[in-house]
Every structure is written in C-alpha cells, then in structure tokens.
Length: 272
Image (cartoon, helix red, strand yellow):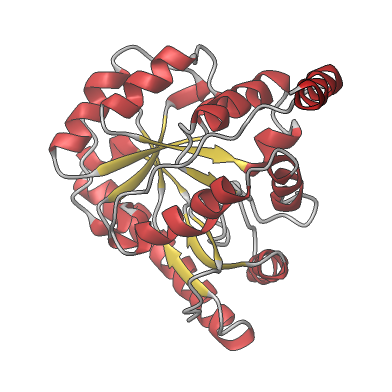
C-alpha cells in the first residue's frame, strides 16, 4: 500500500470488473489502474453503481453486495500481484432513487468510512433533495454529491443549499475539458471559482477507449494559478476521506484575466 502523503487520490471510478458499466474484465482493471498510476493516482476508492432502493430489501441488497464482493476480491488479488504499491479500496456510487436509503452497511460507504458517494436519478435535480441530504447527515453519514455540474436543473443556489445541508461536492475531471458539454464545464468552473468543490475525481469507467482527463483538468486549473486548490481537491481532501475526516476548505480559483485586463493592470502599475 502506498503511504506517500502527496499521492493523488481518486474517490469516484468504476473499476470492479463486470458489475456495472465500468471495467468489463480483470485486464480492463489492470490496464486502467496502470494508466492512473502513471498519472500519479496511487490511492483509489472504486465505486460501482448501486441503487439505493436495494437497501430497503435485505435479501436483494446482500445478493448485489455479494456479487460485487467476489469481483472486487479478484481485482484486489490481481492488483496485489502486478501493482502492489496501489492502495485499492471500495465503496459505491449510490443512486438516491428513494428518499430513505439506509447507509448502515459499511460496504456502501467510501472505504467503510462515514462518507457516502451519492447521485440523483437520471442526472436531474428532483424535488426534496435538501430534506434527503439533511436526513443522511442527521444519521451520522457524510454525503458527497457526485458530479453536481452534470445535473439538469442545477444552479448555484441549489449547490449552496446542498453545502449548507452538510453535503460535499465532487466535480469530474472531464467536466473541465468539455467531456459532458459546455453547460457542465461552465458550472464546474463556477463551483471552482467559489471554492465550493471539495473533491476532483475521474469517474473513470475503466475502458481502453475512455480518457482519464486528469492531465487536461490539471493543465486548465494550473493555468489559472490554481495549484493550491489542486492539492486540496486531489490529494489532501480525498486523502482525508481515507482517515474519515472532513475536507479542508478549498481556495477559490481566480477567473482568468483577459488581455485588456492585464494591460490595464500594467498601465496602472506604471502610473503609480
């Protein structure tokens, strides 16, 4: 297991073979993790999809978790042989398809901590999201909303209220490079400028044809003098999940200044 405190940590990806729309085989997993390691990601919490409504039926839930257990253990053994320096753990990306999801089963949570990665159905913001997030928080769990920038109907007021309700926000790398369209890219930028994103993650689906987008996101944020924010978003805060600790505040990333703004700034300095 990698003990480097500067290693990048990815808390959202689909690298359990054959259980969702992510990696299809062990070879997909090994190739994907090798790609991630080359980009500096050496601590991974993989998060296969799970419908929250399953938690209301103990038998169906256990069958689903057992299926994931078996495939995950195969991946752990294979990675231990080929990539022993990788810290590879598990949670789930839980769809809040019912308002009263039960998170008491540790396997649902990120690396067994109090953090839960959640998403809303059909990439839309349904009514009652604040009440759901408050309930999750009141039961002792810490909700991390996956890729808020991708939801239809999202706006800054909703994001602000989610944060006030005790939720954290995880932005996808690919959103910053236009992977999900212009609206998602714009909203991701708005969250980052305000310091409202708590984590960046890949949401990588473990297919050879898929891009990771880590380098593209870093180039964009780095060009805006966002190095300190990057360290919080990709190293410190996701690493704190592994310790079951709240994220630290992320400094807002300044908006890129246009050429005329730079010229005016230079002229102002010259005339001072």
